[in-house]
Image 1 (cartoon, rainbow over the protein chains, first blue to last red):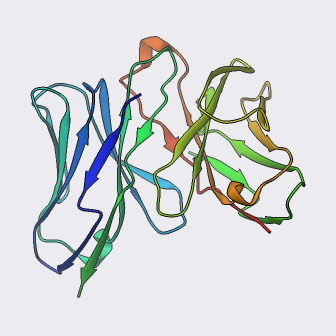
Image 2: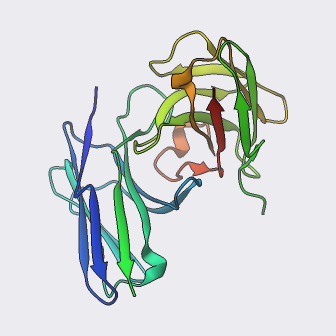
Length: 113
Length: 117
């Protein structure tokens, strides 16, 4: 079965600093999804990557998928308190017709004002 | 455009009881997936419903069952509750068609927090 490992598990940064969260898969990824979750709430979709070498940006958040499609990074530029939360990467293993996501255990981000 | 909705928001049950959670998919979506998220962990896939049938199932016992209605809404039922069933239960919706896979993502609801005492 596919496993996703996220690092770091938690991150505390000063407002305005840049940061990077990593997601590594044990198998080649068909699709890689990044979600943000406020504590105890639902997941908010950020970005989806499918092609090796793909990079997408939204506001101050950039996500990349490496050429081998086994590693992804999420980079936040000039962090703000609104960026605080749990960041989850999810993978679509392309097993069967259903989109069945496997998630990492998450990275807890705290942004100090 | 209504997103994914779930009810109730919170629930407290005792061991051995049964519980039913409800989900309405995002407007236009026909597929519903259920995930269990234990504290400090990522969500784990329970099962997915498409065309009123269970299409795929994760590694969960038969105590977990579901149903999808003609309007695409879904229920998750858990029988004989255990303390370990305490978790946030998330519902996600998307398109069921394989042709659209990769062009859409799963949209998640706010979840139902279940506490088993």
